[in-house]
Image (cartoon, rainbow, N blue to C red):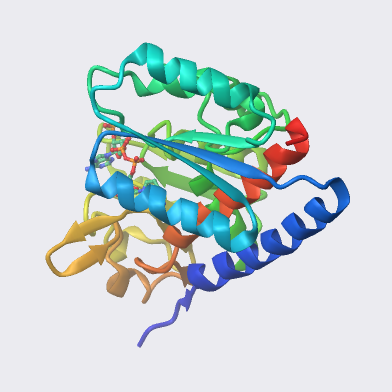
Length: 284
Ligand code: NAP
């Protein structure tokens, strides 16, 4: 018999998007300006094209203007840096994101870092990362920010809780740890060299998996009553699946996110929220 509450990321994301739409309308009525998001897609990776199309569509739905820059895989570093400089200077553009990964020999870190931190809606520049770790205001990476909103929705206050994150990527694991630390959780970040991962996971009141290995986290890795957040998105022949053995973990956890329909939908919702925040910061 299943016991865990299923955290419905689709519903939470829909509520965030509806609120952003309302806030964008109020912002436009007040300032006469429309927030704008510029996306940069280099090359013809089908998955990246789907992600960017989804972001552009979501913008249109909440009244954010989209600027969709698609460039061939052989675009030079100089051309891209010039494009980012132009977007940084463009008053109609509130937020900029460069879809990663970019084709070799382009350097995604270099391109991302060219983005003005006030327009860094992915929250991945060195400036945004530094601001997060120093506890300063700024734009936060969308997926970890989405997880914080899901915890809030589930009524799970991180303060004083033991949080364990499996995965230490710059995109997710590290900023997730910083956000939980800022919320006064006691945070452990695990990775491929962590000794006795199961025992560390068993300590977690809040267990977050962002690894990219289907069903790595077993039911007996979960502390009874824990909140389990599954960030993994693994495409198998049977469909999309997470990093947690959902059926086993839901028997032990008190709340758990499904895949799909958990963390995934929160990422774009937070991107829209960040774009409006950026518009307020840059006055665009
Ligand atoms: P990543 O950059 O590949 O990082 C994976 C992390 O998992 C690394 O820190 C790695 O350790 C660790 N790891 C790998 N195998 C492990 C093992 N057997 N035991 C313990 N740790 C292990 O991945 P990412 O970008 O963070 O993404 C992780 C997953 O989340 C993917 O499935 C991705 O699709 C998904 N994701 C979803 C969203 C979304 O829902 N919108 C957003 C971002 C990511 P080392 O550092 O030691 O190599």
